Length: 283
Image (cartoon, rainbow, N blue to C red):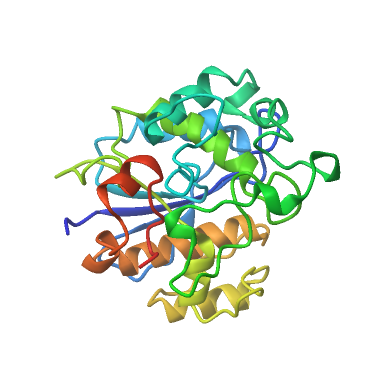
């Protein structure tokens, strides 16, 4: 596996509006145990377009960049991302479609979901039985058959990932052809590479129990970082789980990017790679 000079983790947001306190960007250098630090947002608060522009401006840099949202919707189980609506034979076609059909500001996609509620997305009891909307990607189903708590079709509740993921698909469409995105693109010999991350994987690796993966104080953050081989962090102005998730996951990326097995999970077939993608760190 090629080496990277910098590791970046981005806690993402699908919220409406143009500025999002739920977005946090953390970065750390290779070859050092220095803890990741937060990257300052233009104007003090990140927008999704500002994240896009920040990354595009650094596309030639040797960076591994992880985004915490689902890069595609399930395809393999039903042979379609949005059955009966439109043919999107691969994830790139889905990104293009979501971007074309969303008029929300700042790469938002709430209107895309709301226009399809009850048909593809669950936004409340009026849409029917929630279980009818629960479909998972191959990387979201463990070997024992258990699944992640939510899917990209579930757009309500604290665990929902739909809004962030479809907003993220718009971002990926804007990055397409400019910054490689794994596993849809091959790993480049140089420059930046974008991967999908799941911050709970980093939390588990740092010894945090399932269901208790959120860090909101300095002591807990330093303890988790130490388990990943990182030095203590520089104090933050505020401790929220967006900032701490990004910091911890950047440290996890640095510690695990060289694990060849993570780049070649057995279930990542060419068809899965093209249509659904994969979460880096899922074996």
